[in-house]
Image 1 (cartoon, rainbow, N blue to C red):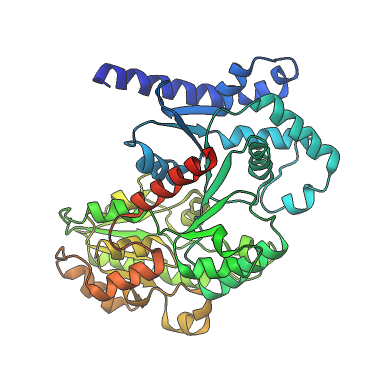
Image 2 (image 1 turned 90 degrees about the vertical axis):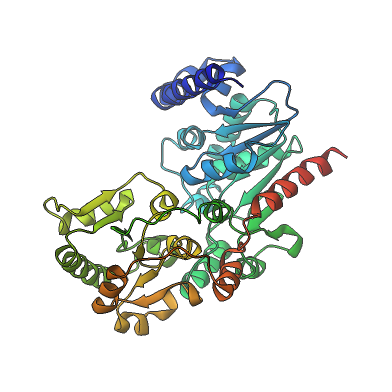
Length: 426
């Protein structure tokens, strides 16, 4: 593909994406009642990411931020494969419209699926929207929501497999136990062919539920392939990266909507520490990576601009980490990414909170330092960080936690997916 072809594809992709976003409601609520043109439905449901009419394998994958990047990384340079992104927002709108515009999600689908009249309405919409699917496999990052579950069931009619490349592989003891309770009692069983997980701990957790050994493959985390390829980046000695500690991230999902537990005390201590650091190190840039859910909380503490404080909502964690001299966060998988870069990494947790809530905190082994000690953090910032590769102990712990210390997860997943497609053809 030459530069002009590439530019044309990029412009076409952006226009397609914008039209989907702006007019999908109109299409679902009005035009779908009368339209019988499959090509129009395909336009709103699918976006070609990599496509050549001569390619023989079509892979459809669920649209979701980082998951998009991972799937593109896995298959973009593999010959004979088309990559097609499924607009899950449109699929969700279809489901909601079938339930009188009620918000149907992974938290309530376990009950809502029993409303047979609404369920049949959604299934009929799928038939009209999808018709006969012309692809070989469907890749998702999680399961439990009705739109994806019924889509998976629909594909079975055409002998098309669904694979879940599981994204919930790292958690604390309490969260793992809560997750097991959720998938046993509050979430429908995965209806696809295979679940790919990061590690043996996740596999053993799922085996305590509805699943058999042959349903689950341990493949590792593909994100770490990219990290290992970037380990030679030059370090910015004036950049400290902080992942904002969320007051209640995942808590409602894992402990229930009415749980009375959060990390507010820890967050208060974190901000006291941050303001002291900003004052003590005026020449250091402190980059705070936040998620949309943190915006309201952060505005309670940061009420005016600070010269050496940068709030980042859009840059990927890997791009922020690759040249940082120090990383601070709390109970985040990003801290494992940081350790894979062999950046000094601190899980910000005061000693008294760590002792009291140890079972709620991820077990990072040798990968991080669990502390909120101000002098220790100051010393880490004052020292120059020297780029080296993780030692043997860290590599072993990375392999245990994320199943990847060599950067070869791409090969494992691609081979597994292609084998499943080929096996189905036999």
